[in-house]
Length: 245
Ligand SMILES: [Zn+2]
Image (cartoon, rainbow, N blue to C red):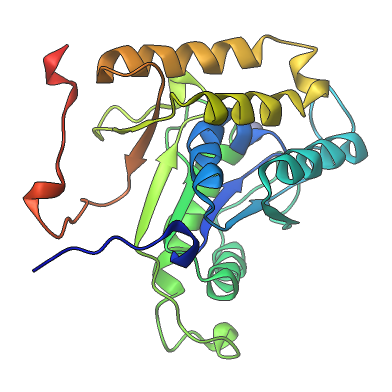
């Protein structure tokens, strides 16, 4: 069988979800930028307005997230899961998220990791997305009858901080070394000026990407953590591992 890779523009959208306006850019912005550069459609869902934050009020933070999406060329929407610092894993939250999945019809979904040692909204959102991915493909959920079932292909977790990296999942590393990818990622992080003025978030994330790059034999790499085992069409698709370091 000959494998014919699809053009990025033919792929179903990449869906990235954040609990707060800056989570995506700081947590998985490198890989989102990498996909944006290939021309893939990207949709961002921000599940609060960041209204409980120490720095920046909700209108400013919403504007910053919209600016980051504009820089990426991504579409963006704001969802409500109870408000910043009030996320709960409830059937209602999971069904609301499943409805988003059925509407956007992504193949790959990025969500915060389930590790508890972080802002409580982050692992709760990860859990809501994990459960929603299951309900989105079930035919009989009464509240979802208006939309056709949709099965995503892969859910990946990302970590916004080092402490939130899952210890029980081997990451996959994605090469984000290209200059245009790194430039784009930095611009999207810097769009969150209310946060970057307060702490050195950009330097922290670039340093994490550099450390992952060294582990992977690359300049810069983004780590994603598969929620389920990856399936390949052929072993020939495997290139390299971090074992060479
Ligand atoms: Zn957050």
